[in-house]
Image (cartoon, rainbow, N blue to C red; front, side):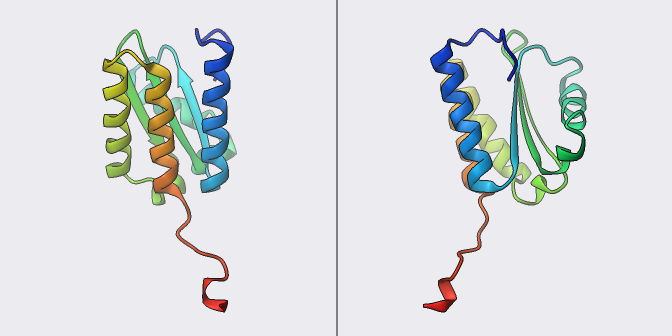
Length: 129
């Protein structure tokens, strides 16, 4: 997220913790963009491309509150763990909270859902017991 997005310090910290946790539990990179998204989906895809070498492992959540627009874009590696159905469910979760007037909770809950579905399914040492 960039400075000046209109979040209080506590809200910003909550969203940063959410993203850090999502990164940690999935091994993917989560990125939030809250603000104007030029050209809708194409603009969100361009934001993902700007991640450079990290783009393949990135899940980008782009929210344009003024335009009431939301896009979840996944890089090629991330798409193998966070599929379209999961993104649709996260989008529904987010838009429900947005319609109730809670932008931060919507983003937090949506990113958490994406992270929970994007977790690695491997359970280390389960077979060694």
